[in-house]
Length: 365
Image (cartoon, rainbow, N blue to C red; front, side, top):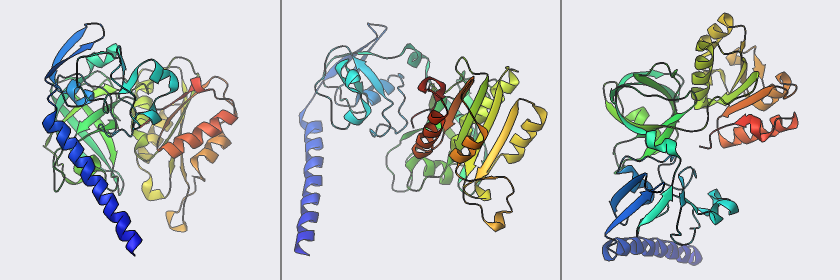
């Protein structure tokens, strides 16, 4: 018992000391006004030192992708420093290769602006905007998944590629005192420019998903930034293998609608994995698309069907179902969206039948 008390005491002491260090840094270190030079002078910003590079850029409407909202759990907010800004932090190391670290790549959420910086970012980030929207419609799709439709207020139109995502800004609620930003894939078709739809699953303990599910109503105003992401249709591939689970259906829906609307010469097989029948949604929607389009095949599967599901479709893990229906990789590309575990399992199966890395696409968030 005394050992446990000692451990808890030390842990509490460490937490207090860490908080004091942060507070002391904030109070004692006045970094003044710092200049951030972006892409050799393409843009130059003056910011108050002391905040993260990610938030400093966002305050000047330069938005870097960050699916985790700056918590160092997604590794998406990579920028390249032209000059060193100190050693790479332990929180950054898991997301950076040796080559990236040697070439000055850092995570913007972990890099504090303490002096003038020169950075390089992809030019496309200059086109990312912040949008003010009105929640036009909310639909309950399953017990834990909702669809949100947002009408754009300012700007009134958005250009994005099917498969990309936006970052929703939450607002403080209950005991949550800070706003956060989280990434959600667009599920609507790009040709509809004055509104977008998102499919959001309620994650237990998730700050933004709880906000969206429990504290947002039709008529509310919400802001988001975007579009972001490289998960869109790439050149090549006569046949497209789409694999998704849960809310991962969102970008696949956008891709399918876009391809069919443009009448592209592509064969599509869409595999959607769920546990029980209650976890399936948009079934009639995709069945209807399948009836109307010879090149589109929809294959839902349940991994934990019970007699009460009265299920006569495919059963088993979605990877097993894919293996039964996709014999080889010739002329094919694969697009994956789901949990990290599902994506890794799918890559495993696809690799065994000849898919190379260049033919498998997914977003890492």
